[in-house]
Amino acid sequence: MERTVRSYLLPALGYFVVLQLMLIAAIYYWPDFRENVGTFRKMAPAALKGLVDAFGSGGVSSYVNGQHFFKGCNTLGTAAAVLFSMGAVAGEAHRGTLEIWLARPFTRRRLLLERWVTGALALCIPVFLTSATIPRLLAMHGETMDYSDLMLCSVQQSLLLLIIYSITFLWSVYSSRPARLALVMLFASTMQFALYLVKGITHFSLYRLSDLNVYSEILLRNELNLALVLPMVALIGVLLSLSLHGFARRTP
Image (tube, rainbow, N blue to C red; front, side, top):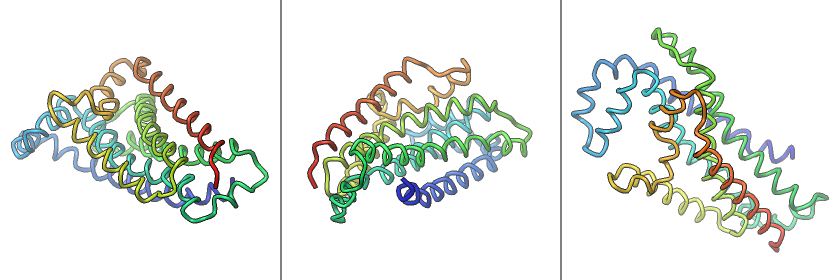
């Protein structure tokens, strides 16, 4: 377990630092965006004009949701989700150390769960930590957002990232080529993000589960939408169960 934690610690720290720097920069430029939103809209491509409108329509909360969750966490978080899970088992097989790992005096179920949980924490904790700094950062502009609402938004964001993480993790259980796995998953996630920007087929994008409308509803109701959250949790559970089932039958 200790070795597993150490292997995720540095990547998770780097992920947190970059995500925090992106958030600081975004909030720093909030007054400029507020004053020049009309200019930004004119300069934006047609596919992005709606996003610019959404960023500016709800004041600072819409801007922060767009910059931090929709843009920062969706893009950087997706990359982190793939990075943290692609080598979970495939990396051991690729390095030829899978048999040594399996020889440890623990059940396969425990070995895999330790790796899944550690990677999931490395993926989600930076989302919550960076979100927790938003009220203090907004104070420099005399703005504020409710801390509890930000934590609820972080839960919604983390569930989406965990779906991507769990899909990649499941593939890793059956694969021996982590690099190819990562390329395919990153290409697939890019295509999913592109679908979100195309009018008429945007509802087929996984990122609809983490867009501005979802976060606006959370802020309005001060609660998560269980109609979205429960299926997401169920899907993560199914993917993890399939990973455990596949790993129990995998040979080195």
